[in-house]
Amino acid sequence: MRAFTYRSAFAFLLVFPDATASRPEEHGTCKAFPGTSAWPSQENWAKFNQSTGGKLIKPGSPPGAVCHPGEPAFNPDECSIVTAAWRTYDFHQNDPISNMWQQFNNDTCLVDPSAPCSGAGYPAYVVNATTAMDVKLSFDFARKHNVRVIVKSSGHDYQGRSQASGALSIWVHHMQSHKIHNESFKPKGCKFTIETPAVTVGGGSQLGAIYEELDKINRTVVGGASKSVSVGGYLTGGGHSILGPRYGLGADNVLEVEVVTPMGNIVTANECQNEDLFWAMRGGGGSTFGVMTSVTVATHPTPKLVAGIIAFLSPSPSASWTWDMVGYIASSLPYLASKDVSGYAFFTSHINGPDGNNGTGSFAGMGGEFMILDTQNINDMQEIWDPLITHVKATWPDAIITLDLNPYPSFQSWFSVYYDQNTAGYDGYVGSRLLDEKALNQSAALGEIFKHSNGTAYLVAGKGVRDAKPRGGSISVTPTWRKAIVHTTNGHVFPPLNATARTEALNIINNITEPLRKIAPDMGAYVNEVGFLFKIHKDLLTHKYKNNPSEPDWQHTFWGENYERLLQIKRAIDPEDVLWCHPCVGNERWEQIGYRLCRTDQGSTKGARQQHPVAQ
Ligand SMILES: Cc1cc2nc3c(=O)[nH]c(=O)nc-3n(C[C@H](O)[C@H](O)[C@H](O)COP(=O)(O)OP(=O)(O)OC[C@H]3O[C@@H](n4cnc5c(N)ncnc54)[C@H](O)[C@@H]3O)c2cc1C
Ligand SMILES: *[C@@H]1O[C@H](CO)[C@@H](O)[C@H](O)[C@H]1NC(C)=O
Ligand SMILES: *[C@@H]1O[C@H](CO)[C@@H](O)[C@H](O)[C@H]1NC(C)=O
Ligand SMILES: *[C@@H]1O[C@H](CO)[C@@H](O)[C@H](O)[C@H]1NC(C)=O
Ligand SMILES: *[C@@H]1O[C@H](CO)[C@@H](O)[C@H](O)[C@H]1NC(C)=O
Ligand SMILES: *[C@@H]1O[C@H](CO)[C@@H](O)[C@H](O)[C@H]1NC(C)=O
Ligand SMILES: *[C@@H]1O[C@H](CO)[C@@H](O)[C@H](O)[C@H]1NC(C)=O
Ligand SMILES: *[C@@H]1O[C@H](CO)[C@@H](O)[C@H](O)[C@H]1NC(C)=O
Ligand SMILES: *[C@@H]1O[C@H](CO)[C@@H](O)[C@H](O)[C@H]1NC(C)=O
Ligand SMILES: *[C@@H]1O[C@H](CO)[C@@H](O)[C@H](O)[C@H]1NC(C)=O
Ligand SMILES: *[C@@H]1O[C@H](CO)[C@@H](O)[C@H](O)[C@H]1NC(C)=O
Image (cartoon, rainbow, N blue to C red; front, side, top):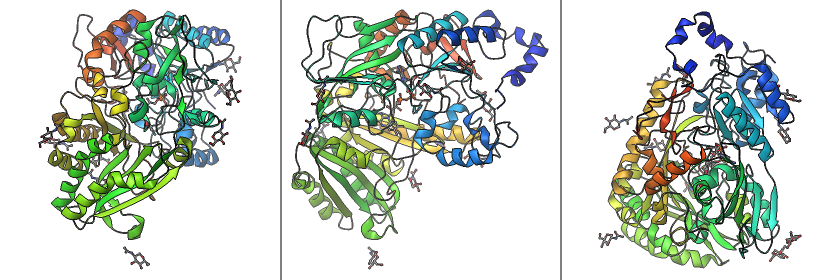
């Protein structure tokens, strides 16, 4: 395979040096970029490679190149394989440079042979990091040569934070170790032991494997709904879980982290040392304060539970009673939370309806997956829902109500059926909002919102998150999580290589999210967002979500009053802005111009300036 080169794209810069004179990068105001004089030489890269014991990868061509007849990598057999795999999480997580949502590669090499193909939207080099030392060496090299750094684990990120053109990617996916602490855990440097069983995992470990490992000893962790999401992005963003209403956020359960800082120090952060970093790493966002090379989290006894699919549907999507019913169900979520129900509700204006209707009709309403813990008696769940069923039957007699409940002896036995089985490999954005009891009290507004949005409401906060006792007293997620009952998301998929459609998608998301901001003005949103959909009843619901980089005042939307402290920590730990991403704490001093990352006006303190990773 021919090595991908940026040379052709930037040839004009070399031929006409004057053209670069007005460009800031030659004066150190931009990060070095492939094809420019500031870019490290082959020899530098080779030396760096040697220092890592040969872990540096120079991507030959982007993964979609096998489908493009004009590319040296073209290979029809490979193309069929890659095309078939393109929609899977596995493909993108296992590839050193790919990521799940292709607009973050600026659609520069789709598997579609009729689309253009170049490596322009992909990182220039990858370190296949397996040790903290690999990460340290990468940071040291990047600092010395002013190279932009990104961190990729699974590549799931809905904000595109694990992707950048012309960057050095620290690929942590292969940091997958697990070490179980059966009885207790002693944080390094602390004089005491935490009397909680725990597990220490590598910084790229994925939730599915952790669940599986712990299930062998009848325990589990607070984790997300996808097997492939990794602790790297999940815990640094806060991490919500169907077990959250019992045990808090994922980050509330963290006991210690090992971090390689952007200045190249390998440190342990816990409640006894590097406390600020410990706080920031638990909710302050991925690839901002350093690379988490390992993390220790509390484990919990695996719960027995009752769970299943519950739907309240209307055969008349356009009838106004349909949305009255939806509003009623949404406004019943605080009641359900008070009964310790957790789960994921999906509101939709159109689905092909449940099995009982032979999957033919068109329905609107709510379908969701719900759970209660510590019981094997499905009547316990039925009783909680009875008042809703009675009210809906009495008020909207045409409603179709289905409850399909089962007992599960362990978290893993439920997860192995209900884990996220959706797909990746397309373009789209997601919107998010945290909702408190007050917002959820507005039944009519909620009905109207979901009528226009196909939104979700995840019952993943409530009591357990409100009452969580994180080590050291607090973590850095927006404090509004403690008031939230529900995290709601919405999304819009758009066709690739269509700038109008991309802009329109952002507008659609903003339009959908705006009324949510109105009913929950101070609640903010979840930085990791969530754009997935479970398989419910033969694709009962089929919408797909991605991320929205245009959330206004994202600093306070994602971190609330914690933003200023996070910013101070960022400045102290990464004074040279080695790590930069959007939307990430402290990114205000740089902005992306085309594919380049350049300094903004130094005096500027404007925080809310829009800095889209690739989207313009
Ligand atoms: C199918 C699906 C289901 C999801 N379900 C849930 C859910 O149930 N609950 C929930 O809270 N969220 C959920 N999410 C959102 C998820 O938390 C985010 O997508 C998260 O960013 C993924 O992290 P990652 O490490 O897997 O991905 P990546 O894209 O590799 O990384 C995400 C961010 O973290 C950084 N990062 C990764 N590893 C490290 C590390 N070791 N040290 C420092 N920074 C690192 C990256 O640079 C990037 O900024 C889901 C997402 C998907 C796609
Ligand atoms: C790094 O070194 C390894 C083995 O020494 C080699 O296989 C690999 O191609 C090198 N990477 C680069 C980018 O040269
Ligand atoms: C990355 O490193 C892991 C662990 O050593 C190895 O199994 C894997 O093949 C490497 N991947 C690539 C693309 O070099
Ligand atoms: C932890 O407990 C499991 C089973 O209960 C056992 O197999 C394992 O050896 C124990 N591990 C340690 C480190 O004690
Ligand atoms: C896990 O629970 C099952 C069922 O209660 C029990 O049979 C098994 O011994 C337990 N395993 C461990 C490692 O405790
Ligand atoms: C589903 O199909 C069966 C067999 O064709 C039919 O008897 C039944 O009435 C159908 N049910 C609905 C709700 O349409
Ligand atoms: C919900 O609304 C009712 C009146 O409609 C009010 O009495 C109640 O206090 C509200 N609850 C919350 C939590 O806002
Ligand atoms: C909701 O999703 C359905 C099914 O994909 C679609 O037909 C409908 O237009 C969507 N509604 C909105 C408001 O986006
Ligand atoms: C691009 O998207 C816009 C907005 O959705 C649409 O009107 C237009 O037809 C699309 N263009 C192409 C070439 O598909
Ligand atoms: C968003 O809402 C505004 C104001 O109501 C409207 O003018 C615009 O057309 C909407 N945009 C989209 C893409 O729906
Ligand atoms: C992304 O690709 C489009 C062409 O599809 C191009 O016009 C645009 O400039 C690219 N974005 C960046 C940041 O270069």
